[in-house]
Image (cartoon, rainbow, N blue to C red):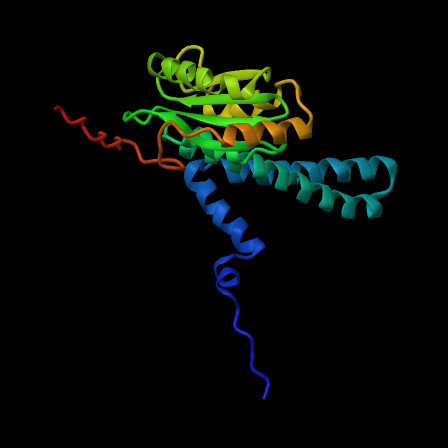
Length: 233
């Protein structure tokens, strides 16, 4: 008798492609009620334009299938962009939001969350890539400045001559909004080869962390517990 194989837990937990799209669409509709109408409008507008071109060149039978494919492609592109904006809107202002953006970046970045921070949940994340070392802070400008300075000094010997950039994420003057962080980092020059990036990562990973911080976005209002007070003799 042939025993039927039971699906693994990972297969059970992983939703299908269509289910993922429906889930994202529900979140997108809640975050921005105008988003889905914009997606449909972009797709239908693309289809209409392609059909009009087919009428003008007298190739309607050829352009209708092409228009359907183009409309689906444009709709998915706009859908993805709107979903990304909704994600930024949901996590903006939460501690760990910048780290979430960094970890989803393309381009071979190695991200270490919360290499430095304080009990107010101001924190500094480290991203290593072809540009060099990028220290990304979250928190008010008057509080994260010292954190960035101390972390830059701490890693400068291990980084040697590698460029070290510091980026402040937030809403204060001179800071970068979280939704523009990825674009900002992608504009940085490529100063290192892949081999140099790997070597740099090894040196930095060997450094002890200044403190342990929770990973990922953290609900507002949460404060880090105080450390133990030194005993007096």
